[in-house]
Image 1: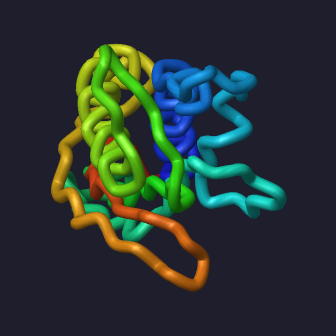
Image 2: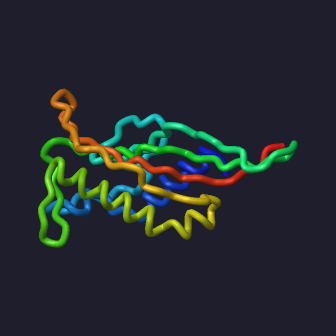
Length: 161
């Protein structure tokens, strides 16, 4: 496990378990695959909103043993951004969400999805997961995007030779 595979594990869990917002519009639009709207530290060209983007913040490590082959507790801090174009609306169980409320809806879904999939992530080498913070939703009038992020910490253990 390293920081790249750690971030890709988060991305892949979201791609597998989050519902595409296009399927929640009325009438429902064409469904996209997770790879068409959820990205991780990669160039995004021609993406259609709503979109989720994972971006790495830091990767601190703490040595936990000494010697030439020492163990480290590595942490990866990631912001998981949700972007929604002005005017986008979804309906979930009879409740309408539009603009900032769509962003809030997906922030909550990201947190619950990753918490619910922790045992699978653990099987893939992630040693721990914690939601650190959720930012407030902001609006950029130039791009006409609503956006906010969930900040998470994931960790794993490695040995250095």
